[in-house]
Length: 415
Image 1: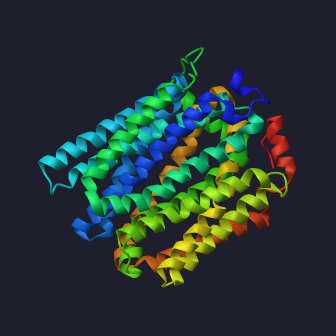
Image 2 (image 1 turned 90 degrees about the horizontal axis):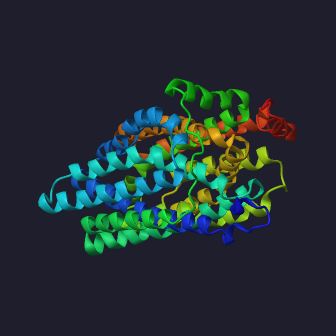
């Protein structure tokens, strides 16, 4: 395949550019929609638990679909799965706009789009991650993932503050309509991407395919450890999904625009961090880079628990994002590099299942304890957990020794 030639820059690959711009527009719309939905629900109810309910509705039903659909993804053209996902989401947001126009005080359309969006995510994410290795040479995967993350963070940077302004200017319903358009446009761009047809559709049962996906983790334990640490981060993210808005408005007395700025802080830092990741590759041992960045990220959560200054909190969030890609980009690239192509879809689905299983627990924790304890103790407790787990990994060197990666290359995956 031409796109996989090592000498070809990723920026010269048309399909890579289409994936990048398609996801860029999609993420911009998602950022707008998340802020608009959370703001409308929180303003109507004043409850962290109500916001947490929206996110639980996003995650819990999708876990069941993730478990069922994951092994079957390798049977389908990944590009078509991505296009289908974006257009279904566009239709869902458009339907929500119509329902809100008929019933202006109704909150159920917001919960509905959260549900549908959650059901689509188990299709879109593994498909997009599985398609990229067929378009980009394995030696360029770190750069390709880093640049893709950079573009997505640009959308996440501009999305929240823009969403805060738009909600105040034109209202949440109009913002949701813009989200519907963005998903439709993203699907149109992805439609022009290079296809990845399945040469031979497997005839195995669901159980056999799922076991094959799990077997990769037992054969390559490093990939399992990557998922465990990523799951811990997702647990923390679940808590912040519920606490960010009340933290800025109630604790730091900010407005909807300040909420947008705070939410933009993490991706703003992530953008610069992802640009540095390719330059840092090979200069330090990979386990030190990955786990060290997680420890620093955990420390920023502890700092949020202590600060009482709005702008300092935004600065801390930027710092948190700056170090995040040093783990995430390397983790995704290791999966794409060492998982066999014919198992890519089901392995990424199992990985996503591990990650998403912890997110509802974080959302529930934030929703239940946020009303009684407040955001600050939860931020500090969550940060201490991440720092402790990262230091544990460094101490016992679960990622140490280059021989670990060499053994994965040989197919053993042993430490």
